[in-house]
Length: 413
Image (cartoon, rainbow, N blue to C red):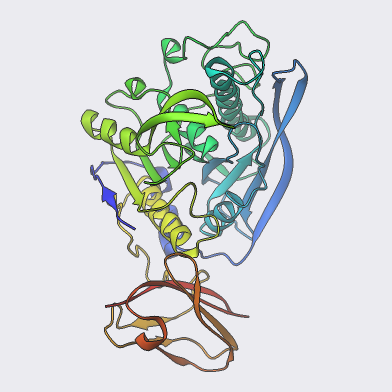
């Protein structure tokens, strides 16, 4: 994978800084996650004119006593016609960030595109985006409402809210950061239609609260037009395959069932515009990869999590903004704080792994997600991974036992 990064170092004054002790928000310090499912956050009319109740799932670290935690609002993919808040494109992310101490909300939003007259069109596909955009902002407002009116049952810091989304959800994350003027709503959208009124905020609910964000995560999403991005707006980290055939990496036409719908500007074009206007941003180019390659590819997913973690930790913990794949916490090789040592890494011959004695299972994956080596029931404290088992390259190590799970990148050169 080739990486392109742009760094702007920001000065931040965040109340959450004091919470970042003991590697909170920098490592997966919690063993388990609790999920509160199907919390209704609003309702609005579908493209068919039916009133739809909308729900979200809330992920929290199990056993956590902190009551003012940063919030990530995640939206799934599915081309605005399919997908689920329980989808495999979003659930692992929600679980992993909850284990770091975040609260993560995975949201449902209205789906569907009207035929115009026989098939979706630029207008009806853009209106589908706006419905999702309105719902997304309503979910943010609802979660702030729970802080003010319900005694903060989810332990959220209302001043530390981040957007995130995959594919169609990436559109929602990006537009929630940058579509903030009425004249930026695309002219093809008929705002007089039932379910499309309410200006920028929409009518899905909780209008008395803010949908303001600190920064966002965009995974294979796009924006309708980068002209809506202005200097002084919010930072963004993006992940995108440069061979994406679904959502353009640069500028391209989005099609459904062979029907051209609308032009969109992908992560690389967004990255260029953010650089031009001086907004802090990072881009990981997933080289030679198609759409959402993190699903089913442990190494790509690992990189997405590590870089997103480092990006968010800048705002939450006040550390320097970094787009690099690097450890910002001692022992981050472990999801649960296992005292593990992995060295030398990179290596030209063999890598030594030292862990507490346990019944370990070991798996090593290639960058394409192929399992290249595995062994089970290894009741040892020291393992030697030899280059002859893998060959040259970058690999993802996974080790599991009753003590927990270790993830780490291995490099043989």
